[in-house]
Image (tube, rainbow, N blue to C red; front, top):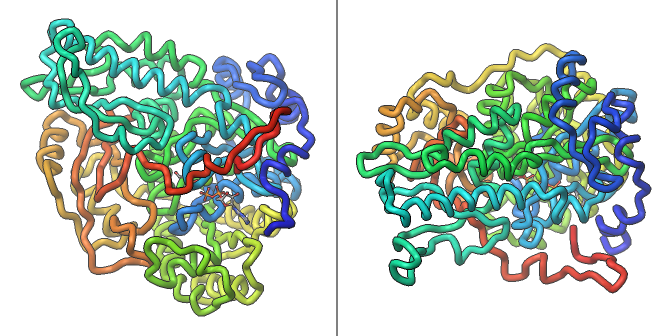
Amino acid sequence: DASFPTDYEIADAAETEHIADVVEPFGLDREDLELHGEDKAKVRLDAIEETVAEHEADGKLVLVTGMTPTPLGEGKTVTTVGLGQAFNRIGKDALVAIREPSLGPVFGVKGGAAGGGYSQVLPMEDINLHFTGDLHALTAAHNLISTMLDNHIKQGNELDVAVNWVNWPRAMDMNDRVLRETVIGLGGDVTGVPREDGFILTAASELMAVLCLADSLADLKERVARIIVAYDGDGDPITVDDIDATGAVTILLKDAIKPNVVQTIEGTPAFVHGGPFANIAHGTNSLMADRLASHLSEYLVTEAGFGSDLGAEKFMNIVCRFGEMEPDAVTLVASVRALKYHGQDMWPPELDELEDEDVAAVERGFENLDKHVRNLQQFGVPVVVAINRFPGDTDAEVQAVVDHCEEDLGVRVSESTVFSDGGAGGEDLAEKLVDAAESDSDFEYLYEADVPITEKIETIATEIYGADGVEYHGDAEEDIERLTDLGFDDMPVCMSKTFHSLSDDPSRKGAPEDWTLEVTEVYPSTGAGFLVVLTGDVLTLPGLPAEPAAAGMDIDEDGTISGLF
Ligand SMILES: Nc1ncnc2c1ncn2[C@@H]1O[C@H](COP(=O)(O)OP(=O)(O)O)[C@@H](O)[C@H]1O
Ligand SMILES: O=COP(=O)(O)O
Ligand SMILES: [Mg+2]
């Protein structure tokens, strides 16, 4: 919509308050903060402990998830930020907790992750670029482990590291696909021992998960110490502590563990901390931010990435389990665009074909929405569908979704216009979530942690993805046996799967049936405390599209940025 200002123009025109004034009404004082300019701050760890000790954690937790998205995303972050604003407009103290962006998508397909329109967190350009340096710190810390591991091998390899059994790649915060598979150590003995290696996106690093799940600096250090980086010739694990890297790595993360706080366009405090994606990692912001926020306000609105099959499943089964918390309500973001996209076998996506009014296509896409509603109801939490209205949506298309939710699904539904109208566009949704959050919910995990690894995988595959069963390829079955022998089988599983489909085949839309999930590898993230299950061809280092967002960006002589969204 050419007449509508860009995210950057809206953000640039917005008035921001000093961050200390924004958080003060919620109980954080200036001395609790480490200021990064006037509109960004980190919260001191001792201030978090004091807050947790002084204030009851009686806040209600609202999770924002979504249906299976188009590659552009359907508005979970926008809805999360908009809801934070809307709750405050209807008189409910509310805070927002979201992840911090990775430069990979910023310069790639999706762009930034600071929301959009009149539901953004500010300063969007800082948040989408270097922010407070957490991603850079994580990248450096990750690569320090790699450097010390290869140095150990070079300096005599006392630990007998099996050079073909190193499962700690290098990391970078850029979608540079050509570095997925590399050979290192070339150049003769002066350089080191040649071996295969590769890069992953920093968002997929186990250190990102460790940062998001740690509840103190001491806990962070203990988690870092037990990260398995390789195995020796006998198949015994070699940890970060074994290569004497624990202290240095923790030093590099000493500031990154502190939650960042900024503000939304309407002055609602927003914690923006940690950035694991929900396809290749667990997909939600740090527990540290959730814990702090839940002690500071009546409502906490937080987002889990991609569809309910990814971010929400892992939020319930991993994050809530570790954080000893549970959602009081879930809002499932749907869009007319995504419903039409699922209403046909469209792969690769031709999104401009979805622009014309087509109620029938919207209705054909309901099977995807319905499966996500059923997924969430399995966790025993009330669901409210949020129709995130885009400019081209027609009343008839939106009404079809409202009718379907009310008449066919019997769930609360609300049309949200928080993108174009800010918090005012989400007041009805907020009211319905208050209603849902106050109704009783009997939250339960999908599986108990002590059931066999295969049972955890099969439960998620059949009950959440809709698979008939699971096939194990490559060394996946040996992996599971070894992990069980090592005593890691009582950890929850973090499924790594495409976000383009409920199944492991990106081209399959709607709610695919008659298929089997293919598991290719299972490895332990012992620092995070979960097992990563690789399925299909999920890429832990994405690539740039033919026309990357970066190509449309510019900055003029007075520092005005264009093309960042
Ligand atoms: N209602 C809307 N109208 C127009 N653009 C929107 C709307 N909601 C989201 N967007 C844009 O779509 C993209 C994805 O939104 P985002 O909230 O990041 O989705 P998600 O978190 O689900 O991936 C962003 O560029 C955002 O600004
Ligand atoms: O991990 C993915 O998060 P979004 O769905 O918010 O892009
Ligand atoms: Mg998002």
